[in-house]
Amino acid sequence: MKCFQCGCELSDKDFCTGCGADVKLYKKIMHVANRFYNDGLNKAGVRDLSGAIVSLRQALKFNKNHVEARNLLGLVYFEMGETVAALSEWVISKNIRSQKNIADDYINEVQSNPARLETINQTVKKYNQALSYCYTESNDLAIIQLKKVVSLNPRFVKAHQLLALLYMNGEEWEKAQRTLKKSLKIDVNNTTTLRYLKEVEFMLEGDETAGIKKKKSNVSKDAVTYQSGNETIIQPISPKEPIVGASTIFNVVIGMAIGLAVCYFLIVPARVQSARAEADEQLRLISENSDEKTAQITDLEQRVEALTDENAKLQEQVVSYTGEGGALQTVDGLLETARKYIHNPEELDGVSDDLYELDRGYVENGASEAYKALYDELLAQVGDKIADDCFKEGNSLKNQGDYSDAIELLEKAWYFKNTDAEILYVLAETYQESENMNKALELYNQLITDFPDSEYADMAQQNIADAATVGNRGGGENNENDPGQTGGDDDRTNGGLNGGNNTTAGANNGNNP
Amino acid sequence: MINFEEELKKYHPSLEIDEAEDAIYNQDLTDMADLLVNMIKDAKDAEN
Image (cartoon, rainbow over all chains, first blue to last red):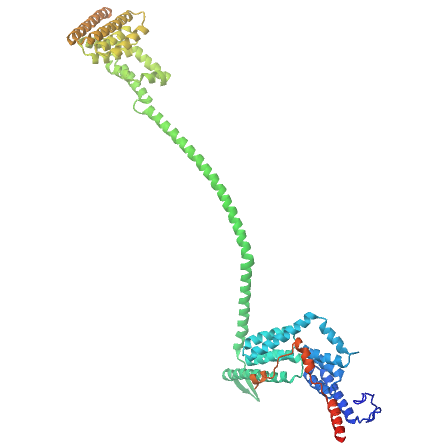
């Protein structure tokens, strides 16, 4: 301790040994300051920070140069989240004692971390902002800001207290209680915190008391009580059990919901994908089968079409065999003709008609050997006789001028006996006389070709020449446009031919046995 | 029963770092020792 007047070190005397000044009161003041410092130090040791602040401030009021008290005050401020106040005390302390001062370390500790310093500054700004929200009755915004503040600086006691006050104002007693208890962990004997907490606990106690009273009133209403000796027995009410059961059921339902959600989000998509892949595979197989079936159907359709065509051909063949003029009918006709001939060999009219009506082309091309043999045999038996009969009758009709019937009979005769040149010649003559010169010339030429050595061949040539001559003359007279002359020529030509015919007929008659 | 409005009046804006210098300069550092010295000085002046 130094003299306030001369600065000399004081002894245990009540005056200064250097200047003689009375230092009795001064020493008492210094002792009081030390006492407050010790008190503050003790309080800080048990985290009674607000009490420590009061004591340390008192100490500094008695002795502003008490560096330890100032440093401790700064430390307590820092612990309560009021960094600026702490820095102020440390700076003053360092100003009082620039050497060997722990405040120097504290200042360096804070200033060496700019990010932390910035965070502290932001915390202070947010706290001030929250306070301004409170003044403007924007309590919700203030609560939000204060929550941020206490999350950034959990040791900011004033922020905790203000937040608790806001919760209390909003009658959120439990939140206020939690906040205040956090605050109490920092500053265990803060008067404001304890006052708030008392209020909060009082309010919570009131709620609990009301709840208990309510429960008690329910018990008193519903419980059955009876006296057993000196004891009053209250029968417990059972309906508490269902509350546990309901909770269990509720938990089970939640568990099932979670399980279903897991199934829906994890298992079902995998199953769906698997099922989709399986369906795609099946679709592919079905598509392949479909293509194969389509190819088979096309093949079968082509086969059906081919078989239908074949069936139609076979039907035609069947018709050709069994239908009108078919082979079967032809065979039947030949058999019937043979039967008629065997039954009555003298009656040839029916046999000749039947044979004549047979298809000669079928006999020559499509008929079986047996058929041909029967046909040839039958023709050999009756052919000449029928031909002779027809020739005689046809020649007779020709002479009578019935050329159409004559031609029919002569054709029939030629059919049955096509080796007789006379029949062919008479047939040609009949055509000529019936004024069918083309057919007549055709038959004359056939006669000349087939029977060149026959006398009828010469006669046929003569008739052809005569016909050509008459044709030329008729053409020249026609050019002179004299109808009467032309008519005379026609008569003469016809007469000549007829005369020739008559000669031929005479010759025929001569040849005819 | 705590009055919110009255309690709110007890809260004051906290000092920001920019304001620390002003706070240090404006701090009243007069202590009992200063008062004693002044009183003794005044008393001597009165005697003279």
